[in-house]
Length: 288
Image (cartoon, rainbow, N blue to C red):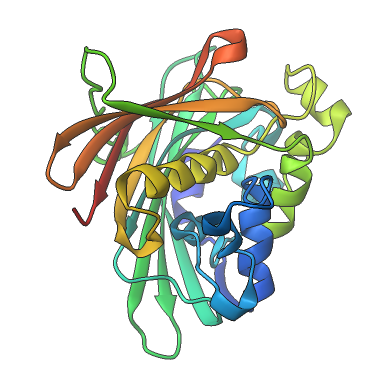
């Protein structure tokens, strides 16, 4: 069981990471980039001679690992899932060099016995050479087995819910994923066995390993760049949303978009084959 005071006092790892172009290409492959070998726009994320970096790669830069599995945090790690996530990009991401990720727990919201708890985490990613802030990542982790633990600061740090317009979308795009997506994506740093080990997935209540929430986030981000940014990854400034259902590797997503004004849009992602909304209340900001 989580002890709120102890959790707040725990320092998360500060991680320095040296990036090479292969890291950027591997991340893109985990999102399904390159499934169409004739899509030249996608191939730019895989070709070291003209490399582009996925903006959502900030999510795995300076990543502290699956720290929740460590007993001292008191979290039932097998029953954790990603609830909400938001990313703000302050500068274009480098394709090589060293970055530093500094993470901190900003809040714990107890939903009650049997209802779980929400842990809020923020990470700032800095370019070590220039000391410039590259990105700020905010995530909400739903700890399904830790309700009734008490809490602190949850109301202050809970992200506001972004309302998607109640009308037909202005556009949509289909985004395939690979059956190997979770196995590839985990090589970018998230080694949670929920996404690779069938026994762990069954213990958590899933029939099979599910795709990382942040892999779904990255697939959606790739679609936003295609639809809103003219294929320019540096034009995406921010995005966020709520994970509403898991995705199985190999499923095809449908990303629906609503234009909210210059440089702003709402989105929702679903798996039409089973009628499931997998990411909702989405927002994006971009250079119009």
